[in-house]
Length: 187
Image (spheres, rainbow, N blue to C red):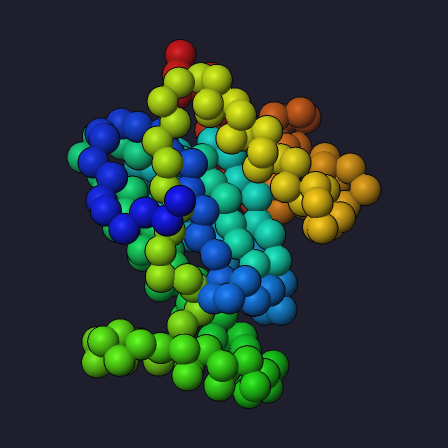
């Protein structure tokens, strides 16, 4: 479900997904995982708590606790801009002119008038409030299974996939992400 309306629940936990334009594997092609972790630290410094995540070749799933008075929509919009600039920079450095042309021709007139040069992410972002512990745990399980389910096969076992919060929950290893256990938020 693509969400275009603002989410206003203060202090809520959200399951969020943003996707590269046309599901292109731009995250993988640019090895931009490090920049996503940098953004996570920026969000953490603003009071947001990342409780779960997986970075896939062409999309990112997150479980985020938004502090009182903070907007999840603005956070994710800023994340997409922050990451898009870096992805474009890395595509240019790699000489990926065909991909850059495709992203440039995908910009809508209104977005171009506001200065956008490339369409790196889909315009909408999936944001769902986790209404209870059961829903939160279901979304966390989905996030952790994503790299090994269906067509992906990005690792032999989900715990072996390096760009996920699964190691944090099973082994206490947060890796490069600033993670908060959901028990610490829910009590």
